[in-house]
Length: 497
Picture 1 (cartoon, rainbow, N blue to C red):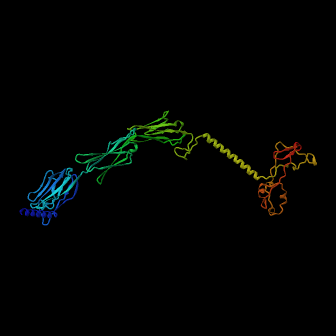
Picture 2: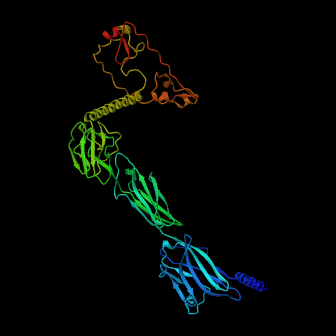
Picture 3: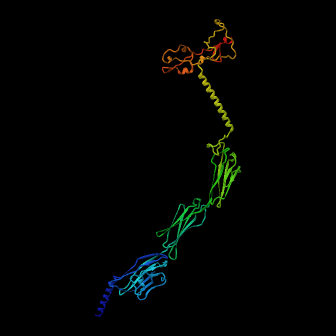
């Protein structure tokens, strides 16, 4: 009987405890995080029952690898205690916890100066009477901000003729937790390598190198490294300093060096890093003509001659090496499309003999043209009427044979017969009666004339038609005829009389 009574009592007590336990909970965050050296709060709240149970003690514990380590304890009788190695870094947030009659419903603690070793699971345990123990747990993660740096492998990079790849820059994200991601941004054509190192304290160091073939094109190029840590981006940049041999070219020869041109020169231009310190000029297969060397230029003295033709070479030297450039100079007799005037193209004859010949030819052409013009004008002034001498044309000259008709014999002619000038009447142009153009009868004397002037012939138009004038054809010159210088002929008998 007694056993039955005890059993019933125990069942009622457990039931009471169970019913009270359902109303008592410990509230905590499931996860929390913070950075090394920073501070973080670990929340712990006890939700009591009604009627409330009595809290005997609150204990914070670190749970690592299946074992528990006490961190801090709050007891209504004994007070507050923080254990090593958390003594200087852990404290209860609520001042009421530290009173002689503390209030232990809120036992949130603060972690200061976090360490990587603080990363663990933390348990907040409440001991109550008569309900027993109640607890909950939070996972604390500690992050480590990496140290990022971008460096050049050498302050000066030298471009070599072998064109081997070499590492020009390195980007490091050291002691980060979690590890970072590194990317590169540049116009250079290169390759990136990556390597991760896991440190004993749980951090990771990421190392990346960038390799290129050093050339003159890589000089002054920008190289940027971007480190992405969680959602944060850290960017650093460097500019490459690549040294290279001179690249040489010669200016000054424009393809128009001709005889007697003045003030010509050649200039040696070089793209080099560092700058060129020595320039040297030479002429292939010969020695330099009469020139003056100033810095990197050749100044040719006097006018251009054929002696200036040849291949000119400029050797440029800097601390990396020596390179050469050359130009082929040719000299022509005359300029190629020379511009008017100008320092290098004086307006003066290049060949005096040719200039004199041209002047003489021009005068001769002018003389011939003037003569032709004179003859043309002279012929327009004269009429077409035969000669002006006292003789007439054959078969109408008015002379009879010697002794015929009782006429006196023809006097002997001199070797150079003289002819009288035209009379005033002959010089006057004939007037054509208006009636001729109106269909009437021409002037009787005008119609009897065996000739017309050129101007009359040009004006004689009738009914829209140009009048043509018929001339009696010259008689056939027989053996007893003698031609005269004026175009007339006479019989030999008359000539020799």
